[in-house]
Image (tube, rainbow, N blue to C red; front, side, top):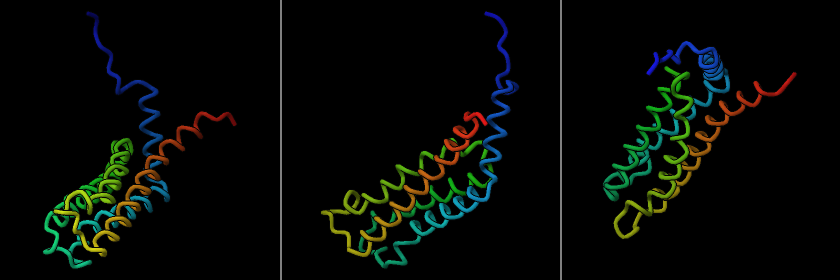
Amino acid sequence: MGSHSDMSTHPEIAEMRARLERTGSSGRAIALEGLILMAGLYAAISPWVIHYSFTAPNLRTNNVIIGLAVALIALCLTLAPERMLRMAWVLAPLGVWLLISPWVVTANHTARTGAIWSNVVAGAVTCLLGLAAMGLTVGMNKRKRQPR
């Protein structure tokens, strides 16, 4: 076949990268990244904050893993927004998992009320923040397409 052109030099790709960089460095994006980081860190430490780390070891392990994953995504959004804004969609399902995990990962569905509320709130917040992060890129695409 013929030679392949390098898509990284295509003008639309360069424009998309510049737009994502502007989106990722806006004040709203920076605040959102900080909130996502705090939600992830809270989920990771919540077993010790709410005092269920020994009574629900499966939920503890789940929250540490999911919380650190959310915090890592937030950190990557901060460090490489041009690459990570497209990955922000992962936050919404992670938030939903946090929300339902007290009933899914505990044996005999015996999570304590505090653990359930902690996960429901952390999961809902994470999901909403993930949707907001996705909305930043969608909003930029819509503003670009509208004629002025």
